[in-house]
Length: 307
Image (cartoon, rainbow, N blue to C red; front, side, top):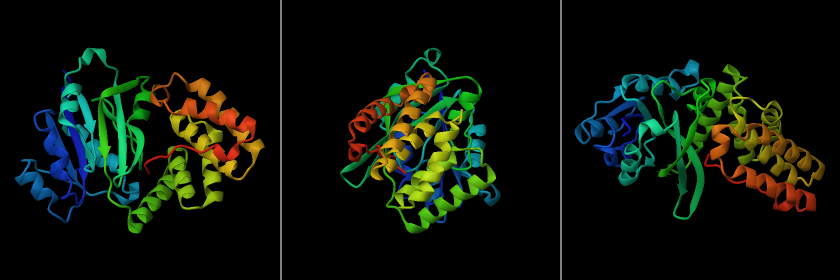
């Protein structure tokens, strides 16, 4: 059996919080909720409906309003051997969660990845994954898009795939104000921690989404060239998207160079725990290399990410 404690950070989630947490009743041993400044009924619903008193903490502008600091404070309040992270716009099926907590602790590594499906409207589903469970001695790292993967790598530990559960992620429709804040935080994080190249991957992908192609090429190229040890998947992602940009520009030489470098790099990191569970990258690389060899550049299209 897994003894799991959940930490969730919230702000103005009155439309989500009950539906998010109520399915977990009786399935996790402890729940800590960190409220970062709600002005709606989130805290009242937590108290009156779920019997949870939220811890109120403010985000620090000098840390680019990083959630990792308050999230890790919540993890510190939990006494369980396993920690779980969740966002209010994510949903867990209670039967799937029951299957997770029924697992034998002794058979497991230090982290568990589950499928993470993001729903946009009624039709579009973007597939990804998330490290949702990890052992208590690990913490989240990063000023934005914080995660526990670097903690596992630094300690020489690993994570595996969790087929028993998937997260259903239903974000609100994007607003310009939210996008501007996200961009500000990414820029802030890059200034504070320029060597943490995970930020450049997300900034590069965002630049591509908004048509800033030159910025995207510069940022993605930085991650492609550097091959940061803590972020092998982000580096491969950058290679894939960079190759896609060059394919749309009909630069066959650049496409073949980028793909060949990415395939060679993949072979050196194939045993990394996150690379192993990322089942889409190797098939994509193989297909893209074949398309590039045939000159079918218009068919080299990177798969989508939910951000």
